[in-house]
Length: 568
Image 1: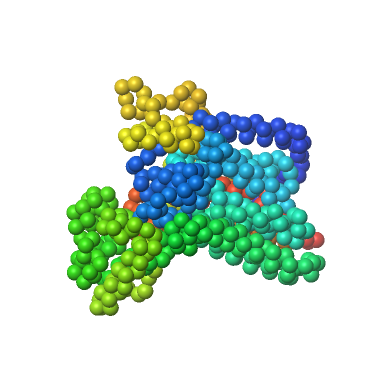
Image 2: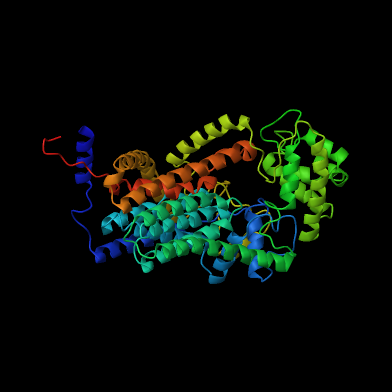
């Protein structure tokens, strides 16, 4: 009874049905808030490190410039097809339309926030309530955090993932209505899914949400006798995301076929190189180190028994590859660096003059490594991935890292509005980057110091964002607790909810599980390969889901059970 009374009191306290704001008032508030959000981004400076991040920021800048010049991804080398290229396409696009990079990202976040607030209209009925959801997402600190100042794909990937999640939600909540209501949302969902897939090699991690969501919605449509043309609805809903993803993948593969002779998305994460590297990780180690997938003793065996690998010894152990990728603290190649050292060495040895030649070489070397594996009694089972092998020893460290990551996210660490160090100007390429993305960088220092110089406007916006981040830090945990409690109670009272409210609970639960899934993926890579500590950039996909779940807390209150005649 006390719980019911508490729910009733909460519902009366924050009821959204008492009063609402007019369209004119809502529009005026939106205009002011959007203008201020754009003002914040206009006063940001990119953090550029050309030449210091050859496999990250520098790579995508090079790819984007080649696209802008009409050369697709440029001349083939060991990095050209190593990462999925859509972010480079995005950079080339904003270069052509001459929108500053940080403003372009801000506009996309505003559109995603508008998408989410509009898509919950079947549940959140009033303008002021939807305005609350919109503002919570638009001013989410992860949209302006320090890592978003980098010109890199991990500042863009969370936007595309959020587009997919919120569009899928909008489709689910309208699936029983006429086609004009749900068709735009499943189309946006398909676009988000497709672009996420071709933006990162692990973009497929959002597929579980897509598949599970389709199955749940299919059940709801199937059991409702009043829904017409069920088969057509479900077939179209299934076909659009598949068609969008196929179109995006086939377009990139066709371009790679035209320029490099291979119909592939990447020659790094899939194909002969991935199989060759995976075979190397199958060999037993004398002393296993969780951060070293192919240690020195394994390499020595390969030098001796693989004719094609023998020539790698000097470059890997004493040459350029060692200088570029060797970890002196581990006194070996870290898992997340060895495959780059391997590819660089192959190029220096003349095995990567073309994509076809490189793939033929890796296939030949993989066959030689297979013969070594056959003689190794302690070998692991077949593998074809560049990720380190999953071992039981990783379980405890991954769980601890995941736990720390949850607290890291809830406290909004790493959300500073400014970069405390200067952009790298030593290579002389900084003006090229600034001109290409139409954004200035923080290369000016305070006189007689190495600290970045910020104008009064920039200092004002930094301080404003600091206060807003502090508000999120205070509000997020209690709102999350309330939201989790509401979801739990809603599943207990599941049959008393209408179908849209039922689906919303599945959506929110799916957001929670997808957030945790991402946390565990990144925790595993941190333990097995990265070893850089928790970094908010790699967790960027989680923050929009978390903020949305918390923003829905005032509007997801379960129904209060009515008293019976005897007063119970």
